[in-house]
Image (tube, rainbow, N blue to C red):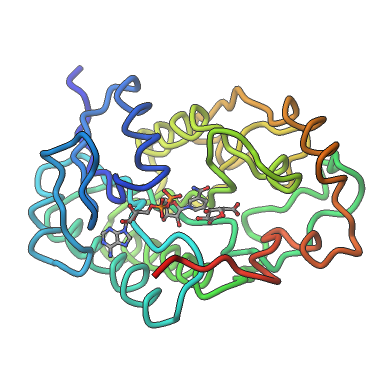
Length: 273
Ligand code: NAI
Ligand code: 15L
């Protein structure tokens, strides 16, 4: 079958760059969109999410959108409002107007970042895993914008029949760099597997899932992601010994270690501007 055409917003970013490498093997032809030029991709659409005309043209004829473009850390409310809240609204309006039926939305664990870390040791008992229906507790304006995106996705499904899988991504980088990340890490390869499942599963309506690898120390329930057909193959445990030797185990007396969102709760990293 012909590759499915997917608009990848945020194509110049860290995750966008990884997905440009990994998604074609799953059968996708990618159309790229970012406010910054995309290295090695002269055909990429360089435009802001605020540019409604550019967005309309960008989504025209695609089968689905993988919406990664955003301010991906904390920032002023005004900047988050413009890029993440208004920007995501403009993206959904373009999709609705052009008849695009499926969006995969890069939500974040920071939509529930103030949720206490599950009790017990490094291995969480199945009954203590954080579920997707846990109350939302954003830890930043950034996390709040992801709550908005999830609600917007629900509205566009209920009102207009645009389907979304909202993936509350943990940390998707080549390797985990902190002990917290041992719990929330999603390998790029598993990320591509999960996005592929989210792009192709049938009858998703609006579904919210957590996105990580099958980590030994996982904090949340991967059941909803697996129900889409996601089969994670990686586990951060191979990085555990080195990271723990360097940083020590998580300590409940350390405020940075008490919540799902880690140091976003205490010292949110700021978007550079
Ligand atoms: P990133 O900051 O590396 O990339 C984001 C990209 O979006 C940048 O290339 C930026 O130029 C673009 N962008 C920002 N504002 C824009 C606008 N107004 N119009 C057009 N493009 C704009 O972030 P990363 O790590 O690649 O994350 C991608 C998405 O996944 C983000 O939505 C982020 O919130 C989400 N996410 C990422 C996680 C991770 O571990 N990488 C974890 C949880 C969520
Ligand atoms: C996020 O939402 C950020 O976009 C990413 O840069 C990481 O900090 C990640 O969460 C995390 O929680 O580690």
